[in-house]
Image (cartoon, rainbow over all chains, first blue to last red; front, side):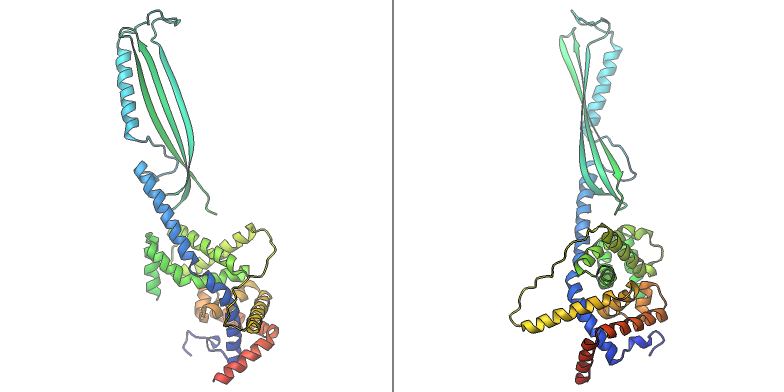
Length: 172
Length: 188
């Protein structure tokens, strides 16, 4: 017997018999469970990879911190810039009162602003530090419209904005 | 073996999934033994082990000493099993229906099923730690020193539990043990 072995590592026939009886009963049940954990792990990793890929494509740099808000998409940025440029040009010009305007302040151009918002549950995702989180997406469309009577034209700028918020989930 | 474990844990910590899968394969039987000792139900033990490995993957970056991986994992398995036990509502259990095998004598099959049921009932009379140690020894075939590492006890304490557990099982399963001892004697 080496110094690492104990008396019970070399059992007597009666102890061997107990071992066989126990093994036969337990192994019958437990051997059927083998392989499940590896399969579940593989599946979880595939799901995580899928979400990571999807989210990374939408917003590079996501997952660095929780509750980050991102402006999504180049179109949003272009639209926002366009809105700023047009508004600036508009404000720098002398205001034009619309002909036959019923507005109380005739110096103010007619401006109409409408905001549409909708919320989506983006499902559960796994962040880069392996923390589970719930993704909440809010899509907002800001529409600004005004009438230029000098040119008898209606201008409209649509500004789509998407914010994504991650709420940390408690792993059970 | 220890270096190998250290290497595997380090790789798994760096989020190498293949290394973690190797760890799952290596410790799955021990994990099942620990969960089974708590649940006494193989399917639920399987559920708990599945959940425990996912928790272990999430918590692995927090493990400071890689040589403690096995004991740390067994604690996670135990907690996962306890949590699951709390969540599960008591249900009526029906015996599993097994597909009939035409090569097996029905009498032999029934006797084997009855013997297994008696062993499971006898195991339930033991305390959880002794039951865990006995299952680790006989299902996984671990040496005392290895069991001691997993359950974080001294080898002497493990031997004491083994001795006590065997003694109690002998009382409950005297006829089965005698029959098996005779068969071992005939072969030798």
